[in-house]
Length: 228
Image 1 (tube, rainbow, N blue to C red):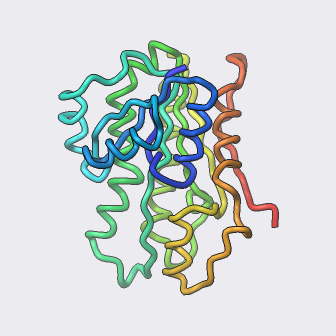
Image 2 (cartoon, helix red, strand yellow):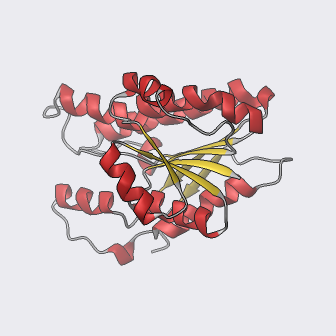
């Protein structure tokens, strides 16, 4: 199988990339710049890289047009994300635009560009969303809005591509022990204990379950919560 993963540099994306490589699948990793691509290539020997910055969705078409993406894809796995907490009264347009670009508009554009390869393979698109994509709390407006939008993107895509045989799964992890979660705790002013939260590899297992499901079924939505 051939997969393209975003966000492989840490956390859930890294765990997922490692699992896919370990089982012998062909892996492509999206990197935001050439330096990041070299780092990922060294960290995941055997994986191939594409350079494209989700923070600049309007440039993704140009970037991929100057490279050679795979000619077919069994899965597109959206794991990359960014978060900035803050009250609505304090968040600036810069924060809103950056959050929406990386978490929503970038994934939408990357999906658009790679749909021909996914249709060819009757592949699967997985959006790693968040519990914040189902409900929003104080200080989480920008992030939650981007993740609510990502849910809408997935739901529409699922309806549109059903006839083409493309499956679309959204995974909603609760708090997961990742560098992003550590940053969230710092913004919340709380002590960070990774043992309290879901291991990234557990979320990777959920994603692989959706990918490996026989063709007679699919998992539209999958919610994961910490056991403690």
